[in-house]
Length: 236
Ligand SMILES: O=P(O)(O)O[C@H]1O[C@H](CO)[C@@H](O)[C@H]1O
Ligand SMILES: O=c1cc[nH]c(=O)[nH]1
Image (cartoon, rainbow, N blue to C red; front, side, top):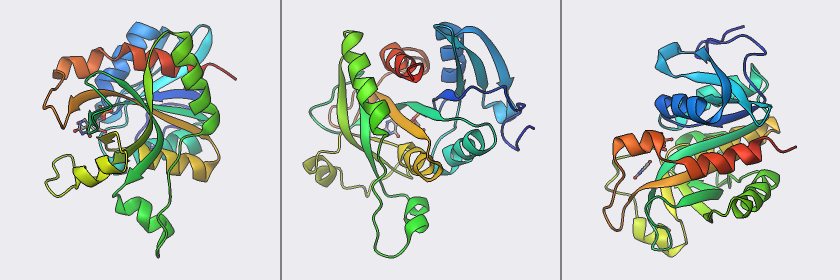
């Protein structure tokens, strides 16, 4: 049965799913990478599609921006539609000299300032949202097989896109590579539900150099990240 935010029926959505924030990136991925894609939802213009990749059913679904938004979609996808392998394919802001514009990053861990994650654990606990190790290791192998490059490390999922108070120098000193707004929630919700999740990114702008991709590039030009995610998604 359809959920409040996803207008699909049980069975319409594959167990393996790619999750861009931008619904138009979902449409682009479905139309350019999947065979026979069928749109299963357009509720709130957050688009979702299922097709096949190399013969394996794969879905792709927008999640909106920020932890409150992705948490709604990931909850419904896992608990109502049975998704088991979830791949965020996002953009991020590079904040470390080791990463350059358009680089692919894979989040081994996702630090966060999110009160949603803090409130789950309460007290003095700072939970460490982590990638599923099996997916992470397969993604690294697939990156090499595809003759591509990806940097693996810690990123930070923040609540505010415009945040003058964030201490980028300290985060950089501790090796945080980039900033985005959803991965920590994906990792935490996947851990709670005992399903697998991995977040991959393309650096769309750089906090140190001021370089930025255009809005059109953000929607469409992230093929390397998507190929790594799809090759990893279809493995058993
Ligand atoms: O390009 P997406 O996947 O939306 O990801 C990044 O872009 C948005 C901010 O512009 C946030 O959602 C952030 O995490
Ligand atoms: O959340 C994001 C995404 C891209 N670039 C940023 O600076 N922040």
